[in-house]
Image (cartoon, rainbow over all chains, first blue to last red; front, top):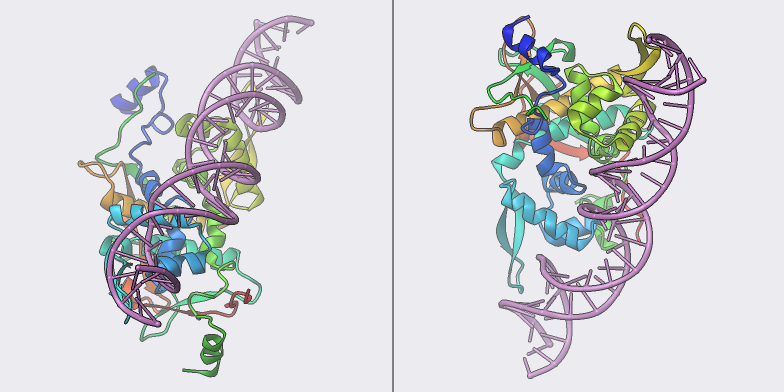
Length: 169
Length: 169
DNA sequence: TTCCTGAGTATAGAAAAGTAAACTCAGGTG
DNA sequence: CACCTGAGTTTACTTTTCTATACTCAGGAA
């Protein structure tokens, strides 16, 4: 046991149970996309919707919540507003995904494939994700930087540069 | 335009905007893990917690919600209960992850890496995920069945066997 | 000028979720 | 026996979300 761990134990603290979890990246991501409708809005952007009325129609989401969620996604830089113009109408705003939003795709694919595996209708999934061109089924996989496929059991979580303990209270 | 698409348009419906979204696998997964605390409980199981008191201590989650979420995770087969026994105490329950729970790891890794990239403290992430043995950094990637790395833009979403349109109302 | 449309904002009541703290329960200890 | 502990349950209160409807606003059309 190293000196730091020993000092913690003397203070009645535990490395795992008394760490500060407020800067956890999972929790931080959930602060942005963890509210109801947010991921579903991104799903629809992904499937091609871009207008306020599109989201309302396909999601059945209340207008006030939809407006709030869209505003937040734009503030966070996950969506951006552009304008479109139908002939005979004035310009109106539409929402498009940004690179920061595209980077959420692995997480959303992970949710999709778990649902496909465990919660699909008997006949199968409602939507299939394919590799354009090659046509093969696409999913989220865990890999290391060297390209090895990694089993969940072989992931080792270690304290990073921003690791902190809770303030003793 | 095929006959089906044409018929839909005649009915004022749109393939994308009037589909039935109730069997979406993303939405179904969120029904299970989309509530507050649920993913964070899984994170702690992943980091080694297993007892009711562990979760309460590290998460600061209200006890009634913790009990509700744990019960639901067990009912869903994501966690399972076992017993442990401290010397001089009676047997008490503990919670362990099941294979169905392990299958959520890609989704959680996806959330983690987005947070690491966009919401980390200036000094870096709080936790690093490494490939045990090789030591290289681990993340969630999108791949097709043939093993190709897939860019988000190259994912094609097509209707699957359970695809349905909304009932016209 | 008045009407129409898409994209919101405003408001209010109902339902669900979250929080805090007190209470229960089972079994082991003194 | 009374007491302690971990693992919950119960209850009361607060906050958020949901639902529904009404209202605004800008610009093109009649």
